[in-house]
Amino acid sequence: MDSRDAWQLDGEGLKCEVLDLVRARHELQSRMVLLIVEMFSREVLGGKGFRAIAQWLHGSTNLEIGECSLLVGLARLLMLEPVVADAFHRGDVDALKARQVASFCQHPPKNMTPADVDTARGILLGLASKNIADCDAVRAAIRRIEKQYGKREDGVPVGEDSERNEFYASKGLYGRVTVKGDLDAINGARLITLLSSLSAPTPEKDGVKDTRTLALRRADGFCELLRRYERAGLGPIEGGVKPHITITASAKDMTDLKALKDLLPSTQELGFAWADWVGPISIDTARMLACDCTVTRILLDENGVPLDCGKEARTATVPQRRALAVRDGGCAFPGCGTPSGWCDAHHIVHWNDGGPTDLDNLILLCGHHHRTLHHTEWRVEIGPDRKSVFYPPMSIDPYQQPIGGNSPPTAA
Image 1 (cartoon, rainbow, N blue to C red):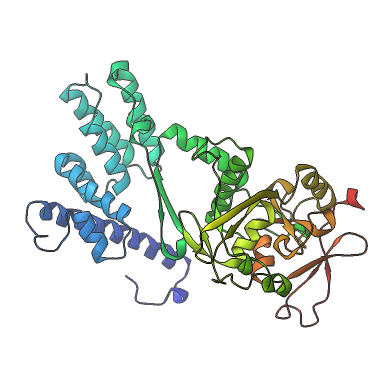
Image 2 (image 1 turned 120 degrees about the vertical axis):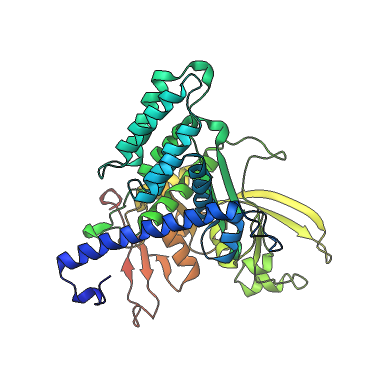
């Protein structure tokens, strides 16, 4: 490798070193696979407390367990497929395509003879070794072979077998939820198709580009998909009610009005709310969720036992949301172009603080700017012309000059 810093290299030098590093990376992968294969033949984990090599590797490094499992799985496959292993160790094929070819050769259509499998192996390795080949091209060749040799009674192809699907949603640090999954081709295509339009860049006004990363846009699109499903009420009944998120919080925590706090002398202020499945969340987030949801008041005694359950209160009706869509046109925050269907109805004076549910106290905000209003010092008011006016924090503008919110021409 070149010992000079990256800025000292010319264009050709940069390209040459990148290619050298790609080759070195493959050599390291090849060496790791050889070592793991050797580990299978020895009792190297005895007394270490790990049941498998993948778990040991995950516990001893910062590699994700999925990456460790793929590496160990490749080693297992190449132990059974020496021809593919030779091609991989020579550098003719990369790890992903070697895994594809080896997996097919270990699970060919039932009526393929050993000679047919050998022929198919050579064809697939020849295709996988080309620089322009990708995993989709190898998979397409496998599909053609399966079509030629396969029979309906052989079952569903591996890539389309929904019984192999896996989906994990586990609570992690700070109550965040980690989502991992492995879906069949059809349901995977369905998910990506639905996310495509929901995760597209949203140009803001004056041609400002969407600054979100692709990963953040995908995450926002997935969250919007969940929200639309929830709002549509399509979910099955569970526990006597339709699927919903339950947030529990003290009334004293949820209000900023001292007069209301004084009416609740025996109520404890915990400083946090509680969400099913994920545990404690901040009061600001609980108040944000309460902007556009169904709220049920439950009166508790001094021991926290419910005494009475009040009626549900809906914060924003369907006609009100339609009127807000006409007035604000979408997210009202200056410069944001998020459409109204993606927005929440935010109470300017919070509902728990006695704020009325009428148009002069409601405003449409996208998820990002809704969080901004609840978690920062930004403020918003409805001006005399009944249009929104925003006031930035002093850290942004020491004079806190008012900024007019978005408003479509039809609302003039």
